[in-house]
View 1: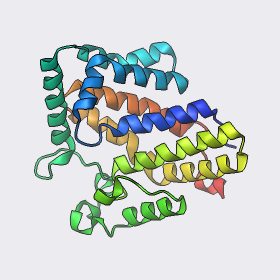
View 2: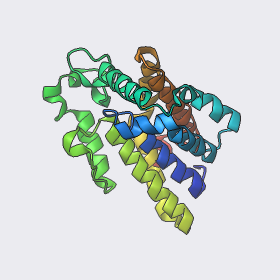
View 3: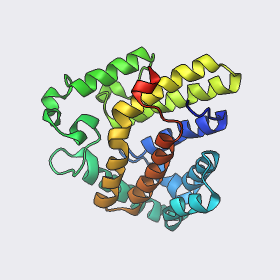
View 4: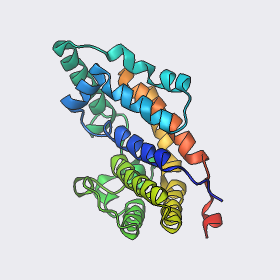
Length: 235
């Protein structure tokens, strides 16, 4: 039987998906400012605390952000451009980027060809799951369903709604959402989330992405471990 999570932990999980998603598109000046003045690190530390991480572990995971603290506009602009260059190096230039943000391409096969990706089995299956869950992405019109940021947006919504169900004592709604979460984990996120961020650590040039990747790995190890059921057990 799945572990029933408290609403605070579910809301924190939703917030973590949102925070991680900020690094899966081009860096904004607002994100650079939050990194430089410590707001982002404080938010992540608070989320980790709500998720049950010890203060010492949260400090270790967020430690890489401490070197970014500055009140200098010049240093903030340097960070903004450095992180944006690293995003391009990692993900966004089809000519030379070293990684991909799409599940189907990351896992390989013929779906690496963008011309056939829209009709791939992975994109179709994920899209059907979104539809059954009543999820409409604000990002997906410009991205395929298997883009990591869209998948994180889906999980952000699911965990938020599950937190609302837990808070109101709606056990049926809670379990229905949990069943969808575990199906999505087993069919998709468990296959590529941790390997993806392990590759980010190896291939990123900036400590910002390495720090975010370490936080993501620790988060997913906890997400995937707690109360997970196989699809056979869910039936």
